[in-house]
Image: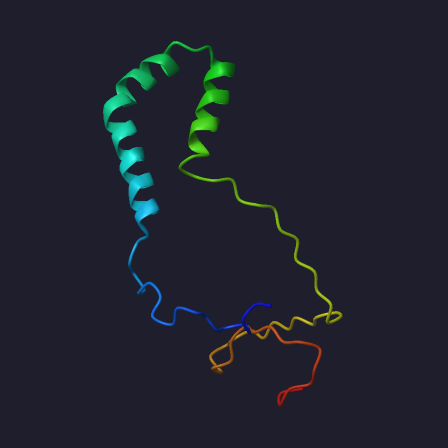
Length: 105
């Protein structure tokens, strides 16, 4: 059986802001690869035709800029009423409200 949510067997844990050793090693490897082989990689990419270049370039980018997952937003609260109030020097501004009545309704 596991621990209740929010509990741990190691209450001290790793302090905030401390980067794990594996992350440091991964970043160092990436830096070494970029510094040592970037010229050669650029030469190889320069010699590819356009279609192959785009394919390889996108594959390389995924290691540095991961793809974002698609997400879908669902609203279960029913319809939302949006009211726009124009400010003609009265101090009112545009605002959005739910279908629930407010003091100005």
